[in-house]
Length: 259
Image (cartoon, rainbow, N blue to C red; front, side, top):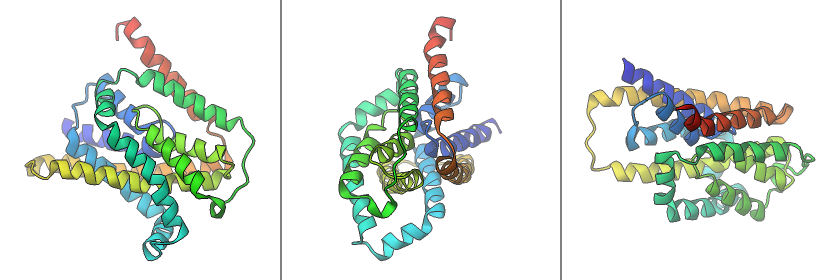
C-alpha cells in the first residue's frame, strides 16, 4: 500500500509540475529526498513522462491532428526547428544533467533562478504577436531555452513561456506554443528511455502501482495545462515566482538547520 501511495504522489507531482512553471524534475528530486520516497527508477520515470504526454495530446488534439495531416505545414516545421536545439543539448549533456538530477545539489539555486525568470518576464510589457506570426527564429530561440531547462529545477514551461513572451508573442499563444513544443521533447525522452529498458525484465506486480501513478500523472497534467492556460491568459505568474523563491530558500537553509 505504501508503494502504491508513493507512486500516486509522484504521479501527481509530475503531472502538475511538468506544466506549471515550477519544475517537475526539481520537485521529484525534492519529494524523494525530503520525504524519504524510494527511487522510482528509469521505468517509472518513463511512464510518468508518458502520462504527461497523454495530457498534452488530449488538450491539444486539434493542433496535433493538424500536424499529423499536414506534416510539411508551418506548425510541423516550427516544432521540428524548435526541437532540434532541445535534442542537441539533451543528448550532448545527458550524463552531466543526470548526475545533477541524481544528487540534487543545485536545485535550491535553480528554483531561485526560475523565480527570477518568471518575475522578470511578468514585469515586462505584454506582447501582441499571434500564434500565426511565430517564425523559425522564435522556434529556434524557444527550443534552445527548452534545452537549457534540462537542469533539474529550471522550469521547462517557465523558460519556454518566458522566451515566447520575450519574443513579443501574446500570453495565451506563448503558453500554447510552449506546451505544443513540449510534445516532441517528452515523446523523444520517452522513446530514448524505453530503448534503454527493452532488455530489462519487469515483474507484473511492480507494474500495477506504476500504471496507477501514470494515470494520476495524466490526470494531474491535464488539470495543470488547463489551469496554466487560464492563468497566463487572465492572471499573473508572479505567484509561482514567489513559491519557487520560498522553496529555494528553504532548500538552501536546510543544511544549516540540520536537514
